[in-house]
Length: 74
Image (cartoon, rainbow, N blue to C red; front, side, top):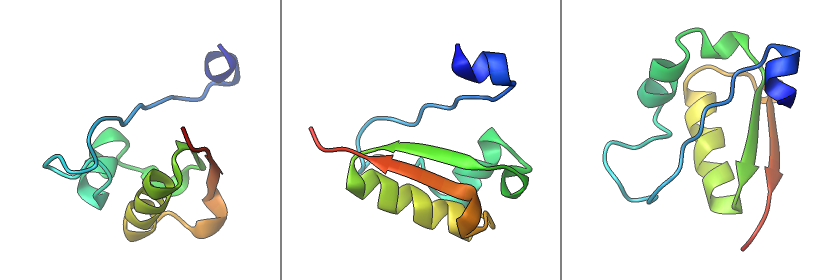
């Protein structure tokens, strides 16, 4: 609801960290949003996922200042 009201888009990436192709590769992330580097990205998940996603986003050209993360452990 919050995303819809603010005109944001939500993309869910979930499943095994070991599946192929890598859901956090720069190519996979750009396939979701070709102009990814022009947007702020908000991440929420376990620390390992955050680290992997952040690396993929940076490799896709997203500036560090545009990546916002909240990590949690289950």
